[in-house]
Length: 278
Image 1: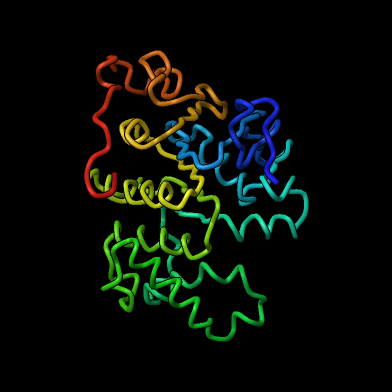
Image 2: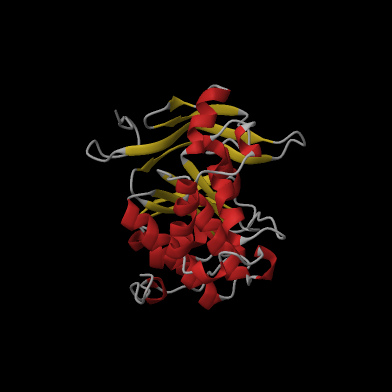
């Protein structure tokens, strides 16, 4: 049974995951994330937007236990609070993670890399043996969905950066996730490739009803693809709303004096999504 956020979303909106008074302070004393209370709606494509060091990657990684909070808690629909190793493993099994640096095994084939997304469903001993034929079919289906089927047996380190990122998306898909977290997935890509990769991820999440939380620093892509934007600056949430509400004042709060201060209203009204992956 799902739960409703009693604080953050309208009663008719189902919550997928929420953080309450979440705070991250590193051993050096650096506060990477101020006390944050926020909820993410089921089926929504949410972008965490901000400059480098704003806290968006820290928040994203805390939602999957890759960063341990100093205070506060995280609660997930159908699982409850992430308060034990067993519950965290359940959460990670159904949460696909896409990384900026791909995290692929370079010498392994695309198929083998994608199959690693199934390891969370097996015991440590079982992973020593070949995975079942059904799981290989699942992996090949995921590879086909990201338009890489002709590269399935090619080594991952022979692919371009955009192709490697699509392998990362396929690896997340074989988990059959209900939630995908993507940490700056297009930061190292040129604008055209970034648009293709982000558009593909958006299309797949919408087709499958997967909740997605994506950290980005590019305003243009946030406005183009996000259903909802959470803007962060200096470890705090400074904007929480639809991209249509991102005006010059909101953009200044997110990016600060180093950001695009001269943005006009017309600059925020970007063209709608078009093309194959819209």
